[in-house]
Image 1 (tube, rainbow, N blue to C red):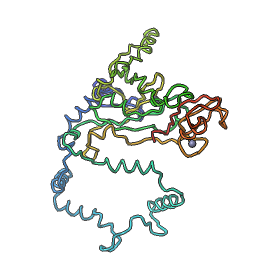
Image 2 (tube, rainbow, N blue to C red; image 1 turned 60 degrees about the horizontal axis):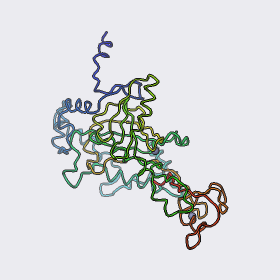
Image 3 (cartoon, rainbow, N blue to C red; image 1 turned 180 degrees about the vertical axis):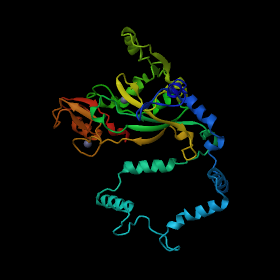
Length: 382
Ligand SMILES: [Zn+2]
Ligand SMILES: [Zn+2]
C-alpha cells in the first residue's frame, strides 16, 4: 500500500531511474534545480570559501562533539602524523621505496615500471588534456560579469561519433562538454565539431584553388536536436530549413504519437524535459546523426570552473589517428584522387603540397587525367 502510494505521489521534478543504472524518467531541468535550491541553505551552494574556524565550529556542532574532541581528532588525523621522514627533510613523492609491501605502493611501482618502459611517456593529447583540467579547476573569471551565478545548473553532455561510422560505434564519446542551464541548444550545436561540417563536395581537378570556398557548414546550415518527442530546429539563418518536417510527416502517416517542433536557439537547457542517461539525437548535414546523452545534471560547486566565457567547457575529446599523405608520409591528407595515372593506389591520398607538385606544372596547368576531391581528415580536430 505504502509503495503504491509513493509511486503515485512521486515528485516528477526529481530524477528517478526508469531503468536502474541506465536512464531516469523524464524530468524538467529548471524545476529540478528549484527543488535543490528550496531544500538547501544558500551557504550550501555558495562559492565563498569558509574560513577554517567557522568550518570547524559547524563540523563540531553537526557531529555533536566538543571543541576539545575536535582538536584532538584534528591532531590524530593530521597528515603530519603519517610522516616517516624527519621534519626538515622533504620526501620525494615520486620515489617508491624498494620492495614495498603495501598494495598501493606495489600497484604504483608496477605503473611506474610500465611507464618507464614506454618510448614516449605521455603524448601531446594527454598533456593537453591535463593542462586543460589544471587551467579550469576552480577558475574564477577576470570580470565579475563573467562569473557563473551561484545555484546555476551544470550539465555533462556526451556527443558520439555519427552512427554510420561503424568503427566508432564502440569507442568512448567523441566529446564530453559541460554546459550551464542557461545555455541554448544552438550553443551546444556550435560546440560540436564534426568533420562532415567541413566536408567540401565536388570534383576540383581543374580548379584546385576554388575548393576551400565551399564548406558544407556554410552551405547547409539546417540541423536539429531531438529530445523527448520534440524536434529543436536550428532556424538562426534565412537559409535554414525545418529538416524535421520529413520525419514528422512520415510519423503522421504511420500513426505515431504526435511530435512537436521548436527552435534550438530559443530553447535553454533549463527549459528542457529530459531523461538523464538516455540517447537523444543530433542531426546535421542532412543525414549525419550523432547520439547525444546527458549524463549528469547538478548544481555548480565552488571548485568548478566559474568563468562563463570558458563554457561550453570541453572535458574530453577522443583522438583519432590521422591519415597521412601517401607520398611524403608526413603531412595529413588534404586531397584524394581517383582514376589517377600518377597514383600508386585508387583512391589515393595526398597532402596539398605533394598533390600540386605531382599533378600540375609550374604554371598550375593540370597534367594527365585524374579526378580530385578535397579530403577532410577525421583527425583535423585533434
Ligand atoms: Zn556529424
Ligand atoms: Zn605529402
